[in-house]
Image (cartoon, rainbow, N blue to C red; front, top):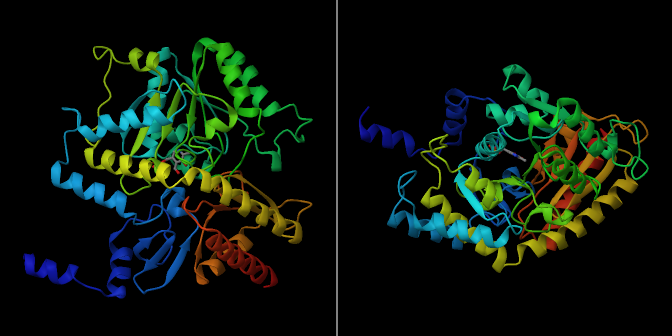
Length: 447
Ligand SMILES: Cc1ncc(COP(=O)(O)O)c(C=O)c1O
């Protein structure tokens, strides 16, 4: 095909062409919403037909500074003109600056970073790091948790639908129940439960034997699974159990990191420093594919003997991604987005709790900062999830110009609406989203 013909095809502005090409030439490993998005500004998305959406999921709870922030895109343009690849061979300037900045804002002791591309890849390397550093195999995680789609990260994940078609995945992954108080697996109620969901880890490690267990991996708040916030003592209890048995604690802050929950890192809510942390999404607000493994000195040094093993990635420590992340983190700090996430999150959660009080089909509202979830149920007594109602609420909200995500295959069959807007969301935008959500719930319920 000649270049003129290629240009003629690709210069098309026809929505019908775009729809045809997506249906005929993409592989639908997962579903897509029908709109084709062309532009994003702040918390607003515009599709190719001109329709606008208030993005209350920040795509996949990842665009922390909002769409199209010029400070980030300008930094990227500047880096594009300078240099775009040194990976794995030379160091580059944005990479070392980003490592320094990340060390300044993470909890003390988490001073060493390695930059990769996706959240799954960061989890994969966190697991490899734990296995290599401890010389042990087994990794504990929780049912209902999500850590990514590559074989190791998938093995740590508890979401059956993502996993079972690929079974058997990777050996050496063991599960305990999640801290899902709304539907407690032990049939108990907090605080009388004595957080048995954490304490069970102690027995599990003893049964498997501490000599076989390399690490426990957990999202401090289960994010995509439905903003499942654990009791305050839960994460400190995991830390204590890990310490008692010489097991590493990996906290997966892919969703929760970089201000999402109203602290720069979610582990700060619990006063816990993990041994290894995986981050992605908010580190570059998804302007670029970027993730990181962040760890302590002794672990970084423990894996630095290259005669014993190497981890290498062609796109690791990418200068363009690191330059974008530097600008992105500066925006988070300069615009006080962590504080705004805490403030707007509290405001939004209170309003959602008021809606739950009034509604027979909203079972519980919960969350921290701007990571919020609402259970959609047939009735409050049985707590039976209502998938049809959840789908209908989301569809009606989309028609009215509000986008949020719907979690429906992770915490068993629970149907949970997840709000995770950009961290610079305003009170007016929150009010508009709540108004649309409320009317979508009422209309869907009346049908
Ligand atoms: C907590 C957590 N870990 C890991 C991942 C995987 O990240 P990615 O989709 O970038 O591979 C996700 C994705 O949503 C996540 O929420």
